[in-house]
Image (tube, rainbow over all chains, first blue to last red):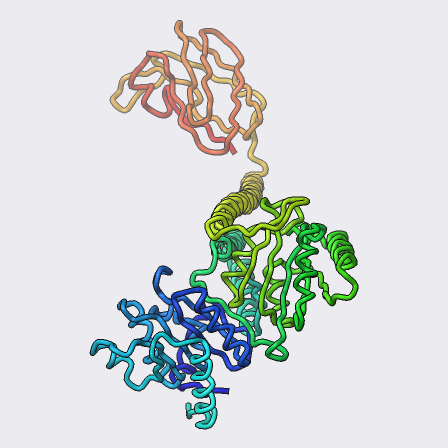
Length: 157
Length: 392
């Protein structure tokens, strides 16, 4: 099991839109394209992870992660794979919230190599995969990160 | 609607809320009048109904954020698990062919889930056995028709279809879901929008196979799926809204009737107590059977020294609801009257000797006066052509 940060555990988060139902290592996949998100989810499932797939804020109104209530899927995820593109400010806001609220949750970001300064600063310290990454690359990176996090052990509360 | 006992935390919170509500109602009943307890009860029920309606409407309109979830794959990497959800289409040859095709693929496990679609009324009355029996029979018949060399498992469920699928995800962990429905929702069958709901909730590929009786399977496009969802959601939300409104109206009407009934009873008791107190206070007040009096012009001297018209008796004591006879000798040549609007009395006293009945229906002291033009000063002064009727 991955480690969970003290900030994530300590925050009062309303379980919305829905809580996790499985206790396996849980990976939240943020991808705006439904089919690609499902393909990544399938790869992760076959690698032994419970998955949640969220399309992010594009076209679905305000992401609960950026509101006061928070997002249950992000709150209880052991690792987050974020592939939201980041051309739009709403996607960057989600990334910012993830880093602020859950600083100890491993975050794997799929981002293009040439990014602007703001995004580069935002991505600083994240585990990055050059976009576009294949499902296999993402699964391998998740496994690597999971092993790394498990070796480090849980962080102190 | 999501069960309030879905988790230990939610169950604890629900029980705590119920205890608090009961406590408030009990306190209102003990410390205040009964109607206050009823009002508190009505407010509590109203709040509960509003919350239920809110959750129900939210469910009908769909999830706020479409986060899909799925458990890890179970079994070897080469294995594939397919969950087929069907009920009223289980007898379709095309569906059975699809089952055979799926089951014949190596390393593929097929589970057919047949949710018995049970109405709320049937759930409340416990009349679910027949519906479960029908689902079981339909499933057995279908599986018997699938080739015997193929392994296809079957399962029925009395949970709501979406919850039954959620349970299947926990036990079977499918890698793909196939939802089989008709084009139109029929009684006892699965709703066509179910496929959209499954697709929205679970992070696995979902296929929607739609069957017309006797024809091949068709897969509706996304626009049709969206239309199913929208139309059904709107219609169901409308139906539920109307039902909820009717329910709230009935509860409110019942509560108001009970409050009115209790208030009426309390008023009656108070009135009975009041009358009893009056009777006890003046139990032996003598009331003559017949009171004799006269009306005499220029009979009584006023404070200014002049003589004025007057009744010889101007104060009448009567019992409420009991007729009192007045024998009046009007010695004047014109009529006079004993008029008390507050007591509902208007006796026209004609010249000569006549007997009249004075009847008062309410307790109290009422001013009376003569309404005929005679002695204007006397008409405005008690003891002359004006006086009091005392009813008890």
